[in-house]
Image (tube, rainbow, N blue to C red):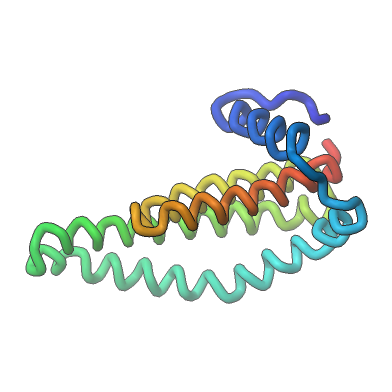
Length: 158
């Protein structure tokens, strides 16, 4: 196992490592882990190519429409502001993934760590964006994503 991480994110990382790797009911086979580690940077690059224009467009529309949302009543102003916050968090998540790509190609722990941070920011954005209606699906999706991320963690070097 890697050196114990510190801080709030480090505590979360240690907790997730404990339950998604050490105490997990099953481990992914090593050949599947190798495949995931090899293709991960390419998948992120493809996602970035498609997502960045969409997020920038959404941010632009949210910023443009937020001042006019008050005409729709109090609820519209709240949802418009939340759309803007969600868009900003999605952009931050994508930037973290972009920073992670070189490290993922080199299989460094630092690259993995940026991918982990991107997952956390993305999760917070999804919780804000989906609200209570999509809470269960969001949680299940992120547990699966974190499980895969933590299963391959030991393949990244310090």
